[in-house]
Image 1 (spheres, rainbow, N blue to C red):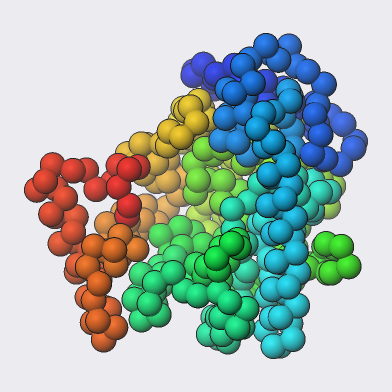
Image 2: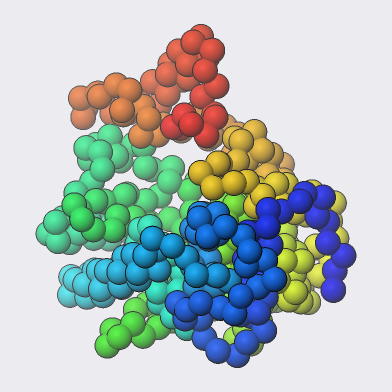
Amino acid sequence: MIAPVIDVTLPPPVIALIEAGRQRLASSQPATIARNPLSPLSNVAIDDMTDYTLRHGMLAWTPVPLGDGVLRQHMTRALEGVRLLQVLTAALADAHIEAVALKGPAFSKWLYGDACARRFSDLDLLVAESQRDAARVVLQQLGFSARVPQRAGDVIYAGIGAWPMDRPGSHTVDLHWRVSGSRYPQVVSVRDVLEHAAEVSLGACAIRVPCAEHTAALTLAHAAKHVWYALELPFSIAAMARRPDIDWIAVRRLTMQAGSVRGAAAGLLLASELFHVDVPTPFRRDVELPQVKELCRCAYRTLALPPRTFPDRRLERRMHRLAFDRLADRVRYDVRRLLEPTQAEVTWVSLPPSLSVLYWPLRLVRLGVLAVQGVNPFTPSTPG
């Protein structure tokens, strides 16, 4: 086992969740929403345990009973998401639109054997850019609407590569035509994801998902993007490391081509240290890189944060840059992070549709106004 790089004391509820995760990984049983045997730390206050379990997305692996009907609420919400995903994929298929489900209940079923094990706040669907407008029409016919006016949305969501679409009382649907935002490495092309997609069964429905290697590469990139803030991110990597159906040589090839080996290796090292799994052989030299060790040290800081506290944007930026192998990608990240317009600009000033392109310079104006007011525009409490 690799010597850990921990230099941060994790809160007792987090330690309890880690131990519960280790017990689950050591079991051959699929994940279920059930109470695990009490851990040695079960004397942690129920309210604290509930808050930390929600904050880390570990509801399926809680070591103690939770309060306030949390599991019931989670199951209700998750089952609603499963049903919605079935409806969405069927509607897109009827419209001859090829779509793949990312993350969410389909990923949970593939990885944990239970579509409701993993908490998700929205549903992510990936389509080819040539079909995104047609897919948006299908969603609109199902009652979903764009979060901001279309012309403005075309500008501010271009860099993200996804349109968030809302419907009252329903999960948000993120309609993707890129696998990640333009400031992050693209570990696999949309064309390849669609061409090599696999299927998982949700009830009577077959849902298209990325193949095992694409799922692994995308999961590693997603965890790095979110700076391993929630324990379920390295836990999901640990669960993947134990699967026999992933070609890790192919996964490393994808991350190397994308310039994201550091971030992938850091996720695997965290999974190894926290949940006692082996780092896949192709990545064993990578986890010795000093940048990878530093990423893990930073990740322990994010994992130690209490509920409703988010990483400082300076730490987030540092971790994102450390996760990129290439200088050019680090420069691109900083430029886009500064210049790309966000929904905050639309909230600040509503421009006529014909002037939507001016949200680019308007972003710099807004950031300048905040700076004059003595407000750091990149703190977690400030959008953008």
